[in-house]
Length: 156
Length: 118
Image (cartoon, rainbow over all chains, first blue to last red; front, side):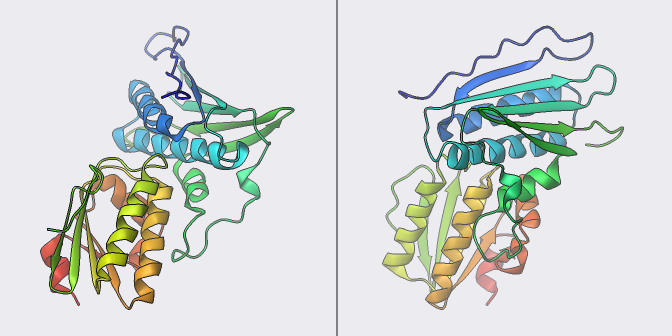
């Protein structure tokens, strides 16, 4: 438990009908994956996404955070990761950002998984397939990943 | 019943040339190394021709868990064996489809169907 941070969720109040912004500050310990994944899924449900769409976001956040631990922080489990969520009051679209202060590794530079009989690479396939937009923005001291899941009428 | 020691793999048993393993819980990078250890231990001790992995109580897995399944398959193939995945829950089924694992694993509705397949 020594380097497992308790997520802090202190979002600012949301506009009418949308939940307050999600704010989670955790360490890069994989023990935090489930907590962050569940929080993001609950946030998406609160924004009006269906369970399947919220589950997609949860998996993508899980994969992105695992990439941060494995690559940006080279396996270190005591480094900071900030997760933020925002729901667009007009469209219901959900934006999740993940910020790290690691090596600046950009997973998009890795070739997508081609052969299902070889392990590895599936995380990036999920990130590319399961949200509408995923943008890696290099920072002077790390990386910012912005994920967008659009709310579509009737989509569950 | 074979000896298993973790909540993640609560049971394993032999049935002819098959070993049937049940997994339980959400599996992500935090506990997929434990799944890997358990499955590899079973392979090294029993070298089954068929490994049937019952995922009825696995509501979620991430890519690290899928990588463990693929590694297990590779290892068992070297021994001339096959891996069967049964009782897939919706989220796991979705990930299996994204990973196109249906082309390399035998997917079965349940243990009985897996054991009936050759």
